[in-house]
Length: 120
Image (tube, rainbow, N blue to C red; front, side, top):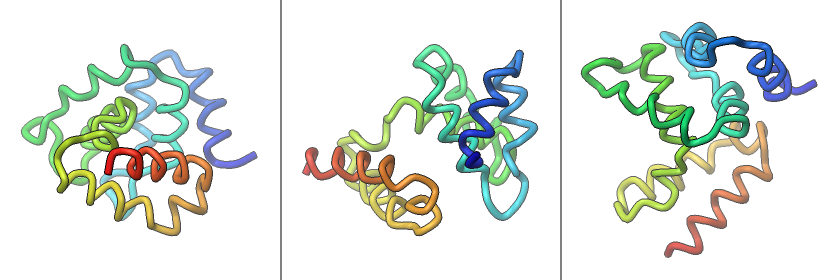
């Protein structure tokens, strides 16, 4: 069982996804829980993602579990991949080149890169 599959299982059992995300974000720390984010994004829907965007920088300081909520909501909505902002697109493109993301789920990275190429 991969880490992502583990988190999919755990989220399926959780009564409150937001609380679970906060508790298992790995923040504060050196690395957010990318596998949990991916599991949440694949299981959730717009109704799950939008409330997480209320975690603005004022409410969710850098390296806080609340920042992880905003991250999950943003990725879930897919706002950055199709953005018209070239700086955001560049940030997404560069992050998708990171080995830990490719190692985690090569197909997911390839799909997002394909979306980025189609918007060029």
